[in-house]
Length: 377
Image 1: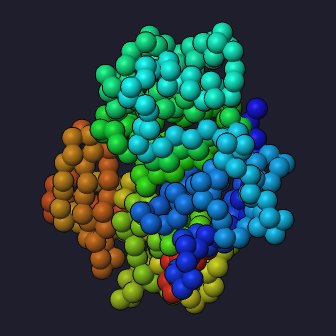
Image 2 (image 1 turned 135 degrees about the vertical axis):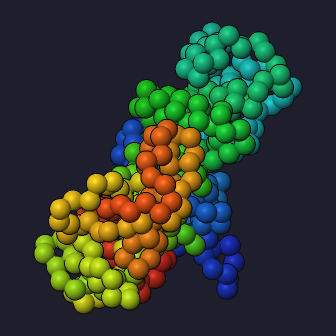
């Protein structure tokens, strides 16, 4: 049965005088929820996962699996990895090449002393779940990379763990296999109702697989939220840039009405309308992020411009087959705009009307540190 996971004020230092690898990280996963830790190499996401698994001992904090403490620095509790009832899938397939598919999957059950008939039944069920029911007696060394990773997943699921941990399980696969297996992974995890902690540096992978996504940088958790909020309401400039916000405008809050502000841009352009972050004050300097795919272009100029509309000119067009990417001069700067479709609408030099939806323009303090931590519980 799936268990909740609670990580509270978790720290990890590998030596005195060194910057902590994980710094005061807190988050919780409900039973059956998939949490993804997303961030660049060295941000602390894998170290966090390894501490949940029991493969690294934290310096401080607590880890609860269900209602039981797997680690508690103050109570001096540190449950061994094999007693945490956790399944784990690694970046490397970690399969035994001299064994068959069935023997690889059966190994953790044999170690637990289950009977031969029960082992055979559970192995067949696990392999059917990952689509390898016809590969029981096949040598693992004859499988493709994607099939090997499915074997590793079946082995992690076969003894019905309370939580499954996945450390960049798709990174060694080619692009086509990654796309196929990431969809299958979420389907399998959700079908079993498992709680999962998933680590990746790939933002698209995180969005497809996760119920909530936590962005990490330099050992700190900057933001934990659903994908839609993460993409359209980044906590700071780092989260915005890491999740693909290529358009960043600088300005100052001129006036506000509820959660929306009129922002005068640097150089006197504007104003534009944007949604205010909770820490933004009147008159404050701000950064405003907007994703290229959230900007809309109109070919026919309206008789009068709405507050969120601006005159613009196409500077450059790049056709990518299924979408067109425009570079547009507007408001004294240039912005990227993405439109889906196989027929480009505008040529270079075309005059257009550009719409910046206020609810999809998100502002946060320009001077805010990009390693500001947001605690998520």
